[in-house]
Structures are given as C-alpha cells and as structure tokens.
Length: 166
Image (cartoon, rainbow, N blue to C red; front, side):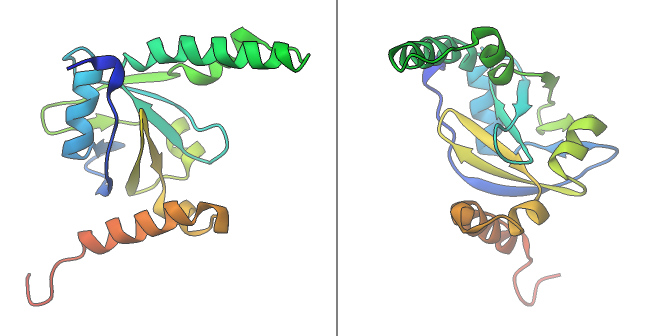
C-alpha cells in the first residue's frame, strides 16, 4: 500500500480506559499503523480552528511539504507574505505517542485541556487525517459544523446497548 495516500474513514466514540489513556478505533488504528511505516505511532497536532486535535501517521509529513509549497506559491501570487516556518510548525505533529495492539494510547493533560476532552473522544475521519474532539464540545458548535454534530450523534447512539441487553 502507498503509505502517502492513506485516507481515514468512519466516525466513532471511544471511552477513557485508565489515567489519560484512550483507544484508537480499529479502522483508524490500522490506517495509522500503515501510514507510520508499520509502527504503532500516532502523530497529533492542534486543530487550526476547532478546540480539538488532528491525528495522522508519519507519512502525512510528506504531504505537508507539498501543501506548504502550494500555499507559499498562492501567497506570492496574491502579493502576500508567507511564513514557511510558522506554517510548518502548525501542521507537523506537536506530539507523538505509541499505541499498543489494542489501540490504547496516552494523551497528556495539556492536550486534554485544549480539546476539552474528559472521559471520551469523538474520532471523525477527514481524508488524510482525523479529528479527535470532545463530544460535549462538538454539541456546542455552530451550524457550520453540523457534519461533526451528526457524525458524533450517530457514534454516540452506536455506543448505547441495544434494548433488552445488559
């Protein structure tokens, strides 16, 4: 598989399992491992406009280089300045963490606080990356984020046990 073309799919909510430990959903876990050259390493950065995180594998950095070049060319064409170092710092992972075969990984307190995450995480696939958001934060977003709200609501409903089961 061409690791530079990993695309994530699906929406899921997972619960906290221990002190600041969470679980990557199985489909996302598999793609992160592929994208991280068969290593179980999750890369995280802050979301540009939402109180949440963006997750991806190591190979995404190759795509960042092209993205930055394209953004720099567009800024130059508009006659605007472009700070490559700042943009690189915004895109690349500010935190990397290993995860085990079950997908368990640790999130440090500063990232939990930034994202408003307490006891569960909503994972929302976004092509070459995925978002890690607090369901409570998602519920408070404006109508321009209805796609996140609908996905999160569906993921939460799938977590509820079926009627009649224990």
